[in-house]
Length: 150
Image (cartoon, helix red, strand yellow):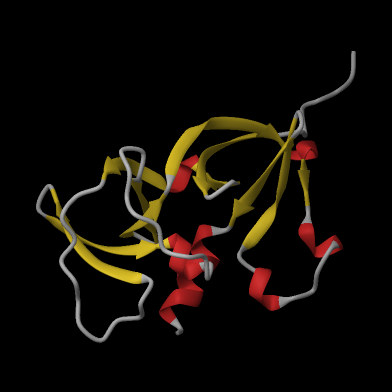
């Protein structure tokens, strides 16, 4: 029997933006919410939609479509806000739909530095291969830190 002790399984919350699937480490996700009233905050970048009051906590909300320079889309019944916590600070990301929780072994994740040295993709951990699907795995901390520097 092969020794698989050093191959770690990781779980990702998989969500959709258009036809593409993305994953974020489940350990970073605190909750997934339906769309709710978002209060606009003046003088913020277009992709920062505003803030929500979630159970007494004010949480900034980012539209991931706009962050990725994708066209804006009308919200649907499937639109969700994924609340992630980065360094004890919660932030919500708007996605088209949440698909599933996916478990990937490390050897099913391809590092994209093989494909690109572009810093704009620095927030991509890698690409998960699942049967005939490809799930782009996001380093949500780097993505949100890039947003704070804009």
